[in-house]
Image (cartoon, rainbow, N blue to C red; front, side, top):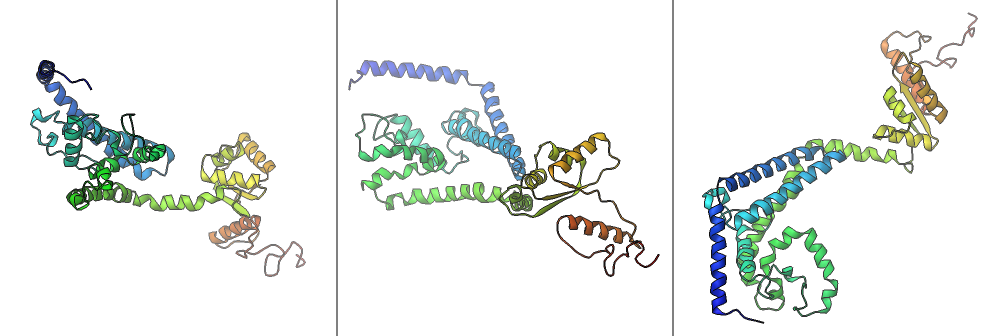
Amino acid sequence: MKKMTEAQLAELETDLNAIREEVLADLGERDARYIRRMVRLHRSLEAGGRIMMPFGFLPPVFVAATATLGIAKILENMEIGHNVMHGQYDWMNDPSLNSQTYEWDTVCTGDSWRRTHNYEHHTYTNIIGKDRDYGYAVLRLTDDEPWKPWHTLQFINYILLSVFFQWGVGLHELETEKLRSREISWREKLPFLKQFARKGGRQAFKDYVFFPLLTFPVAPIVLAGNVGAPVSSGSFRLDAMIVAPCSVKTASNLAYGNTGDLITRAADVMLKERRTLVLAVRETPLHAGHLETLTKLANLGAVIFPPVPAFYQKPQEISDLVDQTCMRLLDQAGVHIDAAPRWGEAGGIRAIGGDGN
């Protein structure tokens, strides 16, 4: 390895100091406005994502909420946390942006990050055995590192590190490779583990318990959706289905295959499986378009059942009309109840001329 001379090192130092002075001279209100704008943007995105998440049972809302929260997390960790803890905004003398006290929204503590990243990585950048950010002690990234058989399967480590990255960063200072080689003992790492457990426990509770519980008010709706969803599958055994009331919009969607909700999907399954589907159409009057829709559904096998009340039973109350209509509706589905008198049956309505009248 070629080494630099003292003169070359002095020249490099001069050049780096010149760059530093140039950067410091350029700092100003523009930079302050930028970082404050990023902080406001992060807070707005996180608040927006949290507000949307309780309605995540709607697929578009779920996608929007998770994307919003993901962008908020990236902004806080990288554009704000990473840069703040590097001391990029210490010149502002803003306590909330102080590099030595900032605590970011991840399981890794600020103190641990400052030790492993700010000191180790930036002091010994890409030096094997010194810079633990290089491969995170689980990935072989250069031929300068001796090959070992287990490196053949390091793609598994890569996948795990990608999925659980914040936990990998959080446990980075554990120095597992030194624990395996017994260069250090677990006892020496107890202070770090206690610190990690406190921060990681808080983060886990916040991310996986507290915020998910905020969606509880809509949990019954989600549960109802999960319970009702099987009826939209042809393999779910069901003899009959009644849609009551059935709007013309629902009938039209069903007639022309626009099955965008659970009712029309389940009704469409009844038709394709040649099962009983009863539609209690509620609109009146009906124009030609409505009649064409209902004719199409009748041809597909649906039973068109406008809930028209019958007066031959001589009802005494409104409930008599309701009972008789419901009884006839259930008859179509193969469910027989005696909620009202039936024509020509014992105890029911006598057939015309049955008593000589």
